Image (cartoon, rainbow, N blue to C red; front, side, top):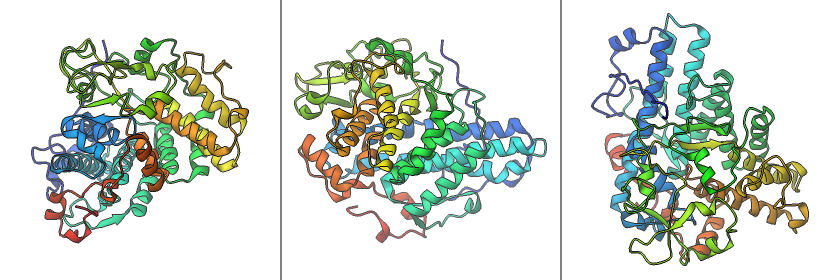
Length: 480
């Protein structure tokens, strides 16, 4: 059986009222609580609770970010996302719910950062470690939303009691993210006390991705290289399609590939799995919302160019549920053992991510296809076809396969799409990273739709504008 993942919570941190704009921590409770390392551990654990919530990583965030991509279609209330004209009222409400959960996590992180030094029965090293965990999770939370809003109110331990916090630019938000991750990198341990806790390798992975997203390829490559050269991680070998469950299955505790996952269990649950399946399919115990699917005719460009020998493609299976004979669902995440929510973990950063970030970044920095860039790409590709990642294989790319550098870059970009679908919205982030013109071209070619300008950003939640006098209605994102 999978581990029982214990989420300790602190009543004053997760109080019934989640009004993060007006509630101030009670001084006497803070004074009595932050005493030792166990208290700090409990306080850090409370940061995970809103992130795991249904309105965050539990369900809504994955779907809002995944269905935008060129590989998926949304059903029901999510179908509007594939019109590429912005959000309707239902999805605007969902965005507001996500916002609340992310800012609750940020608030809980700020409480740890602000009060950890009061732990008189903890050593300086212990205090630095737990502050590092809190700053990692604060940075991670901001990074998960800044690409979608473009600007945010920056809430830190220094303005934790302020109700009026103005919007800051993306540049200012990324500055905070990088400062937090750098601190975390310097103060987190190399190995997690329990699976799912952030380590210095997790901090390096997010740093690499942040720099990658911002087109700072030299730094992205350097951070990815530090992880690779540590020899602390390796790809899980896959020989057939069923072997993917050694990586994604509900009973997996951890793997050599895991760098940072949002950990779930039957007790905490992961509703996201339900969105993938239909009640009549055999992969989720008679439950399913089938909210996202692949149509091999509508998305024929993506489907037809994807090699059927790729074991990642074979995770898609045909299932008729009223939308035509060409619909496909996916069992990358499935749980046939538990009733109710799935127990699968949400893999945000795997070793495969790092290899592909390195491959693309190295080629862009060198302006050429190096042996190292090819090898990192081939490791991921070999595993996807059932070969040993570290041994040459018949499906290896060689430099002669690429007439120019751009062809190689496009191959790596597509490899990232094949590798990371359903994992943190990375495909849409890649499209945004490569520019709005590039994104429009891709969606036009695959979905035959034009992206409205308002579709590139989510609206700032009305509750934030209403309760935060430092933000005016004129600062709302375009089109809302």
